[in-house]
Amino acid sequence: MKDEDKTKKQLLEELKALRQNHQSFESVLQTLMDNIPDSIYFKNRENRFVMVNKAKADHSNTTPEGMKGKTDFDFLPEEQAKMSFSDDESIVSTGKAIKGKTEKLWRKNGSWSWVSVSKVPWLNEKGEIIGTFGISKDETEQKKKEEERLKRNYQIQRTINSILKIALEPVSLEDQLERVLKVILAIPWLSLKSQGCIFLIEENEDILVMKTQLGLSEKILKGCKEIPFGKCLCGRTALSRKALFTDHINGQHDIKYDGMIPHGHYTLPILSGDTLYGVLNLYVREGHISDQGEQEFLSAVANSIAGIIEHKKTEKEKQKLKEQLAQFEKLSALGRLTANVAHEIRTPLTIIGGFARRLNKQVSGDSKGKEYAEIIGSEVNRLEIILRSVLTYSKESDLKLEKANINDILKESLRNYELLCQEKDIEQIITYTDLPPIELDRNQIREVFDNLISNAIDSISNGGIISIETSCEIIKEKRYVIVKVTDSGEGIPGNEREVIFEPFFTKKVTGHGTGLGLSICKKIVEDHGGFIRLKSTEEPGTTFELFFPL
Image 1 (tube, helix red, strand yellow):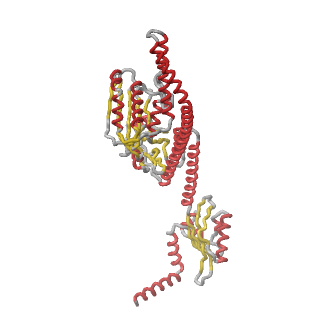
Image 2: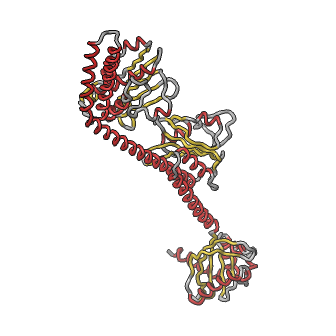
Image 3: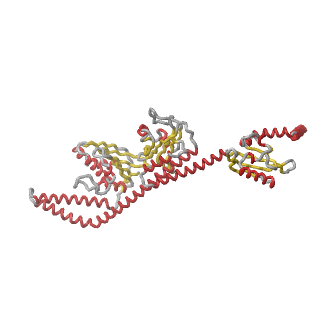
């Protein structure tokens, strides 16, 4: 305890001696001040500098000794010096400190900086105010960063607004995506090359399809036309649903070619909630350093693209609903018409047909009358078939559901066409997959198969192949039994594919078919909760896919 008291006493004596030796104390204080990066100074009551540190002197382009005895008017523009003088006088007269005042400080040489200024009264041993003590922290870089951040935020908002405006324009999705890509690549503060592309997911949910691009070479366009999930950077982004960045061509670049220019990538998922629509791929210069703000902005852009796609999808669905409503109204009108006139038409047709058959029996074999009677009978039969098809198509569905296996119904239908296929030299390739039984109307599904197989045979003139395959798949988390009917006959042109399921549309010659077969097929499949899909081009070969939900 005595030793401790002795130590304290020694320290107090040394401090007292140091204070008495003013020159030594000032030297120590000056050394301490000079090692602080902020500007520090003492002013007397006349606002003249008594002591300043090296940082303060450097900012004024002089030395600490060169500032002693001088005022702010010697180093600052007059207006700036007056403001500082006023603050100092206020502190000396009121004793109130100024803390954290941010201002733009100009100097006589024209330089400036943002500083945070704090000033407090300078007191002597008696507690009397003998001047001011000030410290100013240079916040120029911080202020510049803040201004840059605000500027970037403004540009980000402006870019997002531009993208949202594009979303509202009445143009195709491909045109919208191309314009969005141009907007992104034109942003000045992004370190992007003028290259990029947008992939979307279409029919195959595990494949990215390039929909638009800017600045890409023919080799890239060919190699990256379609990318499976998990392949290359874009495929890995789609699989993980997370943004990826690389500053050079590395092992994740599965698609490479000779002469590829060094580069890096941002690849970002185009996501809306849990729904993945595609991937945004942007090129950066080799060695680019990724910035978190940059990546967050690009992710926001990718989300905006997802919004465009959703908007377009909604518009399509609205248009589809309008068309379905118009179709429904047309069918309702057709149903009402057929219901009202069915009996009126059927009765005369039955009478005409009956008399035609009687005449055919009574008239001699070689006469013109017999020929006319046969024509009348044939046309009556055709009208009855048309009427029956119209009634089938327009009436409300009355499904007689039972558990059945699609394969069994398909085999029954195919047996009826074996001889016809042999006569036309058509080979049947049938692939059955073990399927679970599903609830369906056996007779109606048989009618669907009969229609599709008959159409496939009609499309083949001389020799060909009809391929039929059954399978079970999961599509969008829902299980389906699928039946594919493919023929090697004449393909269907694009303008006809749009109306192939329309009532009364037919490519067959007059007198062969009602033009209601495919319409009835579509209606029956949809009545069962499924859907039908056509795959065809102008080249030979057409496939109809039937999807029945489990």
